[in-house]
Structures are given as structure tokens and as C-alpha cells.
Image (cartoon, rainbow, N blue to C red; front, top):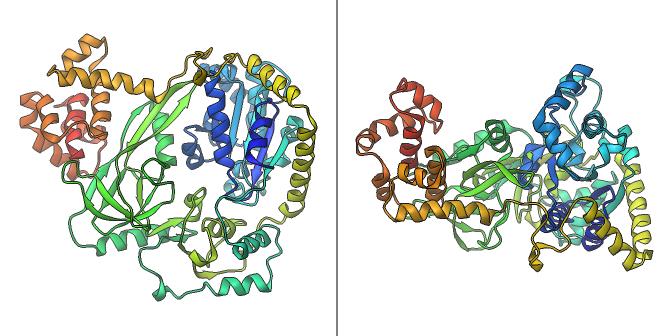
Length: 562
């Protein structure tokens, strides 16, 4: 099925299981549908099974969204506590569409719990409380993990609620990542557990020894330990001073922590000239995507942002970007950091969703079905693969999936035929009815019609920053700006943090905004931040035993950005 057909089916309001091979555009299609809903004033509940996947969609983990946390079963008391939590009931009653990405890593038991909570909160016996449910992912990739060594975890499609939801299966068949027919054939063979002698011979042509590892190419390992060791070792080899870039955050603490867990960029990013890095977000306008590799070739003298030369020879100045959690049209938390990470090495788990031109991959310690498949399918073509080794599990996917995949493909073909036979007028009427059911606007925003629900967009969020920026440019003090705008000082400082990260101020301009007495002590305070190797306010606050307020420390912390 094509992306365009899938999108039209999604718009009719039916429950959908969206799947396909790596590189077929699953996340892209989901994002297209999210934007479509928002254009009509409908705010979907956007979740994923893992924090990393959630950050790609600016959403929450499904565990956090439903209040399940780490539980795999709920007592009656647990259920009552969740259904009485106002923030959970509010979000579930307000929602019309629930999206769950990376469904392969969600246990069947957890999937059933989501259904139970939705029905309890929305007070209806309809599956998932009557929400349109869209689950996206590829069951050939990383499977759910059993907690505490108990009974084997079951895939979500084994859940009772899966059958009750009556998903329309949309199996994307176009390929947007790999363009190498030999490599694609090999990946398809791994996918259906028919990897044989001929495929192995192709793989063996890409085997290299450790000492033959090409320089400046990302290595992918199965274990975090190997990744951390290599990245630290290679950074230490480089001469010159390490430049540190600190992550800034604002919003509700639990949401901020969720963002940080899922963000591929670290809290503190240390870079040196010559460091191999990988971009961790998509920004087509600036010329990079999640997975673009490059090397630090210097730092901008004005703002100290790193200059990255990509493998294609293009130079990009890496500036801070935001990761956000949005719910109900409102931003709950934002973190800001350079969209980079050290990339001599990454784990298979963190590589999921990336597209790489070249990679050195070590499959000698794979321990889970699908790990090898995920790692290999990150690379666009066989010539971009350098393999350090493999074990007996490297080319295996879960044995349950061969037969199940045929079922999904068959169901998708049935859905495609039915869609093609349905008159266009009938499809459009279903789409219009679903928009009306969700309380959507009659016309999308881009046609000049205001949506039925007020939605917070980036443009609107920036306008409040611009108002603060304009008042600062007029020479007004921060306290005065807070009074004029009817905001607390902490909010104005949040605006200032954002504006500094976007390069609107240099160090001298920030210093001019500080109280002269505070500025005199700036050096001592900055030394404590550096000695404690942190950008966390609480540690520094406790060190000074309350001598400075949190707002004072936030203002001084801004100087770390220069």
C-alpha cells in the first residue's frame, strides 16, 4: 500500500495498524496525519512505546500518558487511582485519536491495560473507549522485553484488545531508504527467516578486522558499554580544549525528565575540533536529518556553536534546537540542546529510525531477535556496510513473525482492494463525518478558516519571546518587563534562556542585564557550576546554602552558553 492511500484511510476514522519494512515511511505517514488533524483543530494523543520514539513525534510514552508507569498489571486500587487522577482523565476524555508508535516493543499485557484505562475513564465498553487508535511499527524489529525474567513477553497483536479493535492493516510497500537491490533482497531474506548461503556470502564480502576499521565512520554495537568506551576514548585522543554545551529545559519536571530520557543528544555535550558527530533531529532546511554524520571543523567565533562538515562536504553551523512534549495543543515541556551526539559509536537500540550512508556494525554479541535486522537496515546500501563480526542470532528475526507477516500483508491487500472499490464521494463523506465527530473545523487553517479548537503552534509560542526580546532591546530591565507583561520574573528568564540559545544575545549583552552586585560574583558562581560538572541549579543552590536565588543562578548559568 502507498503512503497516500494509507493517509486517506486514516482520515476516515477507522482503527489502523500501520506497518512496513524499515525505510518505508511509517513515521513520516503518521506525522502527515497528525498535521492533517491539527489543521482542522483536532489535537491527537501522540504516544510511543519508548522515550526515543516519543521524542520523534513530540509525544509521551504510552505508559506515562495512561498513568501505567512500570506496572504490567493493575489492581482495582491502582485502576481507581489512575481514573481519579484529573490530568489523566482530562487528557483521555479530551482525546479523539490515540497514536502509539513503535508498537513492536509494547507488551500485549500493557496494550490491554491501555484499553482498560481508556474504557474506564471514558465510561464506555467500546474498545479503547471509542477512540480512533493508530498503532505503528514493524514487529520484525526489536520485540518487547520481559520484566524481571518472568514469562516471555507477548507481542501486542496477541492482546485481547487487538482483536476487539478490528484494525485495518496498512502495509507500506514502497522503499525510501535502500536503493541497492542485492542488499534489499538480503534484508528481505532476514525478515522472513530465509537467510541462506548466498546471502551469507554477500555479507562476508563486508567483513573487516578491527584494525581495518575505517576512520570517522559510526560504529553500531549491541551494548551501551562498548559505545561509551569508544566515544570517550576517541574524544580523549583529540588535542585541544573540549567545549561543553549544556542542555536547557523548562516545563513540568516529569515531562522534562521523559524528554531527556528519550533525547539522543546528552545533557552535557563535550566536543573538540575533529570530533565525529551525528545530528539527532531532522532539519531539511539546514541540510541535515536524524543520522547525518559529520566532523567538527571548528567553532563560530561569535557564538561558539560548532561548525560541522558532513560526509558530503557541506558545512553546517549546529545551533540549538528544541524537543517538546505537546498535549492538548499545549506545550508541557521543552528541552534545548545542540542536535548532536558523539558518533564514533551508538547502540542498535538508539539507531532505530536512523538512515546512514555508512556504518561499522558489530553483531558478534547480539542477544535479541531483530537486533541484527535493525542494525543492518540502518544502512542504505551494501557498500556502505562494514561488518566486524556476527553470531548465530545476528540474522534471525522472531520465529512467530514469518506466518504473522503473511497475515498482515494479506489483510493489507484486502483493505487496499476495498478502499479502491469504495466510491470517492463515500470516502470523502466518511472523512467529513469523522472530522465532525471530533469537533473539527469545517475548513483547514491553511484555507483561512480558524480551527474549532485553539492550538498552540511554534509561531504563537515565539511571539511571546519576541515581545520580551523587543522590550529588552528597548533597554528595560527584566523585573520591569515582567511587570509590564503581567508575568513572573521566572517566565521572563525562561524567555531569555530561549533567546540566548537562538543566538539573539552575546555575552556582553547578557551581562548588561544582570544586577551589578550579582555580576561581581558571576565568576565564583560559574566556577562552582564547572567544579560540580553540572548545569543543575539545585546542586549549586545547595552549595551556596541559599545565598543566591534560583533566578540568580539561572541568569548566571546563561553565561555558560558563551
